[in-house]
Length: 268
Image (tube, rainbow, N blue to C red; front, side, top):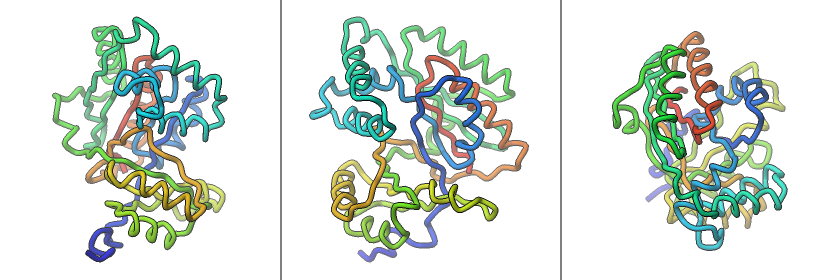
């Protein structure tokens, strides 16, 4: 199969990046509008993120690929090794198994769908908090399955624009059997230094994911791994400025909730 068929150039979509943050709520609120302008999901990188991975696959990064990816991401964000190890240790302690994963689906503005992932030891508390934020921000809770079908689960490798050109990324994706390459979303008036900090996203299956990482290392191209998987919108939705700002506020408030682990949107 030719590369053009597997990753047609006309399908190289403008996209939003998924990032991990571990910052105070006030600082997150200041950074969020700019982050959300180019990202389809925001995930916290705190104790609950480790707990989630440990709960699924154990406390060893060697056998738990999702935890290993989170470990790598934390190191790339300059999180001290002792903090990473402490979070893994705490996530392995007795009593942590009481935490339960839940997913809530939300209708935003302009036909936008939002998926909220939580990790909680009290479901009633988490659902009440999510409902309150959604109501206060003018959104609407959706029935299970109403939004999730608009997303697909995939492994994603992120490469900054400044670290590789388009042809390099496409060549790696071809050789490694990637499913898709998503180009960064840039506005005409974006300064060059901002564009350089945007990302190409290589979308792939779990089977091809290690091969892509190996190819990038061989080419000397720096990259950022995912944290096990991402939810990618099948058809990103474009909205007007007013709806975009209202959705940003809704997602910002959701991310301030302690139980919320990740927020995904199909907003373009």
